Image 1 (cartoon, rainbow, N blue to C red):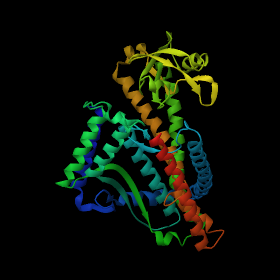
Image 2 (tube, one colour):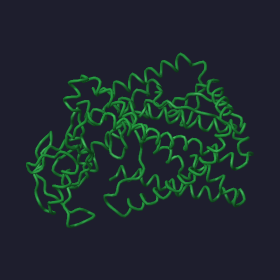
Image 3 (cartoon, rainbow, N blue to C red):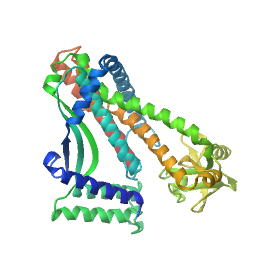
Image 4 (tube, rainbow, N blue to C red):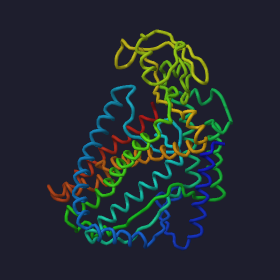
Length: 445
């Protein structure tokens, strides 16, 4: 079995044990009865920390609050434009990538995949910094914080089973329903295996209701009645603080990532390129090429990096047949027209570089040290990507997101509350539709 599945099971069991031992101090709130709930573990330590931090850095926090407001509205404009252009491209261009999608530790069509161990650590770090930033700015303005602590998102076993079936079916079908019935493979890496497991998980709750703590989080509960009575600049500072903290943290991790790469760059060497995705209905997919295959050569010419790969394709014309050798097989593929330039050849794949560790580095430090180093590099990379991405998305002008709350406060400064609320709802519905277009198109294409 994939080690990540084992890690996931161990993680869930540990959280279940923690919640059982602390069950008398846990406050459970149903979000979707029988399917989704929050278990909140309140601690006084968080409130004490926020008070001390806000008191010690009161003057800098005021300036940071104003900067957060500026960055918040700027980020809102950026994400609004990005979602609009992405939705337009999806509706008008057949091969346009989705601008938003589900970020999950699941490899499936339409999902932005993040390895489980990176995903769970990143989500926890994002939540802690996001919520505590809200709380610290709130305490800077002497707003009442009712409670803070850690939370666990509980998902019913039945919902886990349904989601498992859904994503496994998408992964197997890959845009063509015929693929669902073409073959059956019960290996643990096969979608068929997980479809069967999903069916079993949906049956078990008929006899025993089981909730699984899947996602760790953090929370800060300000007094909302007091919040709305505060001046607009204070409200905006508090709302903007969370996304601002994530964006800043994202750039900090980017800086760390680049510094670490500089430090260990000499230990790496180019090792070809990997196919990260094949486009349905285009030459590579039609020839049977799949994701995660390592390209070794094209027409006998060794592929060392992306530049070599692109250079060979640039010399080809639509209709030419190439011999593509990977670590799996050798494929005879007839190239098609590039959708953006009909005079250029098109293979229909997304690729990324495949760096590997130099043998001399392994000889000097052994095999374990490089693995640890590159695991940490991977974690830093995902902390950068997810902090920045989720921080920006949280500024989208819709619903309960921080961007939506900032928009409502901003609109109320220029019109009466009733009119502002109407505009806020309409804008929120519009951008929610854009997000759904991006997510749905990622699944159906």
